[in-house]
Image (cartoon, rainbow, N blue to C red; front, side):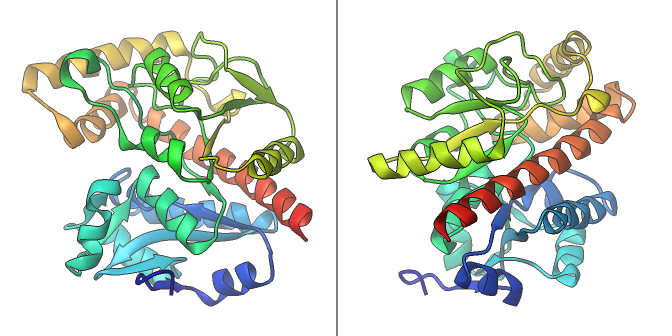
Length: 307
């Protein structure tokens, strides 16, 4: 029990945490809302395999029938990947799903909350949410940014989703005191592309460096999360100039159809999938696997330092 919330863990996750072995949290919206069946299940299992290959234990987070899970077995992942009436959970409705016995997949914000409750300090995802294009009028800003400011979990992503306003997202993170660290390069990546055209606020080149930075932050006290911006591998990227054309076209279509709120991101990703003839999905899978690999290495360094 953590407070009044019982976290149901798989045996391997519970054992790893008890023995101070590395554990990496994974979100579940990428399974339920990010990719079609059966690719979503295959991708989820492959991500878990990558983490295990690096010596860490994967802990996919989800709410199933009102119960919070940290770690899912293959049968549960398969069932979740085929489910149709699954809530998309962020901070605002996470507790609602638990209280009402609902099934929900966790976004970045909700996964961070659950990971912290479970005692997991590293989380791998694709890209975080942030400040949407036109937010000065719509006020559409992801809860992920607020969560990063308050919850002490390292989030390994390929930066913010490229459909967002990345300069404003970086400004919002700076305002909230969230360290943004590019891994192995000076440029801030842009999800499908390695270079957004913006310089990242910070740079580190090794997983051990990230672990040392995190431990120093903990010593200072009162810290929230950290964003590690891990560029997609060179061989898998789609050039920023090409992606920007597709994003502009998808945004125009969304505006013409009156797509708003939580529906914007999945709509844009679907449009871009069509516009890139499926290449954006291949890159998405590649960057998620790349992030999982780095997250496992960071978790291993933290576990070794705490051992």
